[in-house]
Length: 364
Image (tube, rainbow, N blue to C red; front, side, top):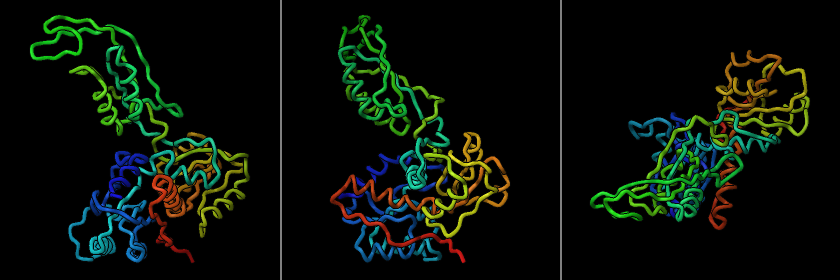
């Protein structure tokens, strides 16, 4: 199997355009045409993980965290990143990262963490704005069904748990074919009136090119009239963090012990505990301090993330408990998630999870 088939599938689940501006997700080392027989999945790429890939004959490592975050000015083995890049190239091992784009989809890192914690009725905590477009196309009534189907099958028309959403209005279009035109209907140099359908739907911007291409291919007109409008609506399945509910209210001390056990965390840090039983829980795998206010504003009893700073713990005392469960601990299930989705899509393909815990932080 070529590497591009794996990357195309991963990017259909977590498009690269959804990664944050500082990120470096995607294919970091290697060729999309490279033949892949074995894949190793890890949270990070370390020397132990690289040696594991070499020993097991894996041609590709898929990691959540990119090995290369910043530009490399030289490759002379001056640090761990340079050493591993050289080692990957020497051993012809491709490296692929799927980082904040996997964080920013509902079924991604936070979705899997929510499952592990036992949350239900989950939704994205901070949906991404300015990601939706409205596509409007005018087409003859005879071809409206096939054009509609092409648009919706290409990914347009998703609203929450509904697909194939569109709005259709009958009307009359007019045009005059000028010299050199070959009109589908009407005669050259004569104004023609045609019964048409105004077809409207919404499209996320990362699918816009694909949807428009499908629309144009199915449309009979030589010159297709269509409009694309930016929308202010948020896209509720794309964005940062997640918020959900426990099946029943739980005493916070009991919940924290349960959390520590589920995450196999050596320790967890927390702000003063709220006095009441908790039910609404907000989470963000990795570094999520930027979502504290959003969690509080949405009524969370507790917010769980990693990498909180000293002064963060002074906020919301008595109203919402902040929990730093660790960066690695809150993202570790990305490895299971990637293994599960790839195994389901490519059931006869050799996919392995790294046996190494790559958490760089230790506790006495």
